[in-house]
Length: 94
Length: 484
Image (cartoon, rainbow over all chains, first blue to last red; front, top):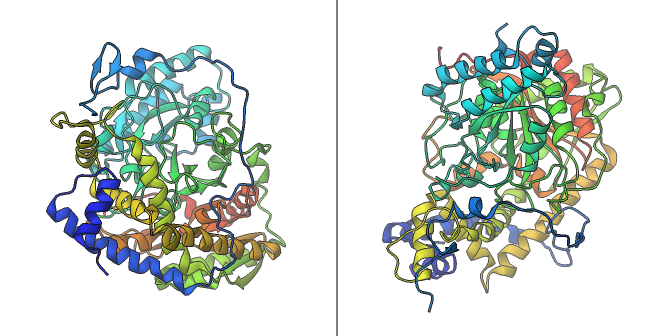
């Protein structure tokens, strides 16, 4: 079942995407089709099944907090779209 | 034989025997690249000047060990210091990393020489390389067809002899499926086997770095170099890396191979089933024990994957906001609009679709119904494999349900395109190693056979794949490059 345009707009806001009217319509239909397909998972009884988030039996990999050289500041900043006084500059936040 | 037809181990012999210099070798690959690229378009960036400089340095030292003087190329998802890394996306069109991926760095430390960066589906989302923001890559076996994806550039370049080997990444089949479509060897190692440091993340619980090569020996050589613990990737595992070449003994006598009945249904073309069944017969002749097995939850792997992978992608791709790097919309008046507009201009359709889907699956009210449900099904899929591996050494299946399809044929309905991954996705969900090797030709197009092993048992894959090569000639098939 297709999503409503309102639902698509809500998700787009959460995802920080600006969609035009055509995109909203297309995504409403396509996401509906994909979610219908995903609903097939409900054919399976998963009560009492432990969710598997990744396959490795490793948790909290820790290391000593030592100071080491990283990438040079100038190189990192050279990828910035806009700088002022060697800091990232963005439009007004508040 | 021409240099571009040779494998890594053959090229090494030529270098070590002083039959060819590194400079001559690297130059010959650039002439191959320059003559083929106008029609193939496997590369996004070519690093000719740097490569030739490195080749001359290698010749000056005059030592040819490891990968000294051997050219290679990287999918454009691997960060390369000082060399543009785009992930085939407009949002990273001008991004120049300040550090190298660990896998790429290890190859260079062993003397490998980077030829350039390879095309892919944007952010590794796709099965045809048609979702690259820049251009599509063609399949060397038929230029009207796709090379597969998302590592389509890697597969096409190795197949066409533009590079002796290449690295790619595989989240749901992105190494194995293009390897199958282009008739080369493609390995997705166990989750945690190879460091992902410096590899742009798609779905972090599924992504893994792997190898494209002309034959199994080359794959083993490269794997022995890139595998192993890396302090920079906490998901890389502290396990000793064997010399994978030591598994290449050609002996599969007594090896127990299961073929899952579910992988020979689900819309798999008859000609593909026939090719893989013949390969299984070959294994039987070689002394292996072949039996049908069942992985009963297979049909649920794909719907579960298309919730888990987009959910993780929506989180990973949140970092592309136009603040620190990448494309930015300069007209926005507030910062939220700047994020949204930059992302909307920078991401292609498939990427937006998956971010939307993943955001939806993780959003309040749907998390349990979709994301959590998918993780529980993921457990069932992993359990299926575990059960079979109690009794079997190896699982064999087709890699993809069909040979390479035509460019433009599957761009309409996303769900149809997702079906290409139906035989490869379960392996990522269970974190297991999977390899595709050529096992036949259908209407002049290569067919791949998928070998699936126990976690961290890449050795058995190498052993079985190499034994198959010793008894067949499919790995020697080369494309005609569109001249039919």
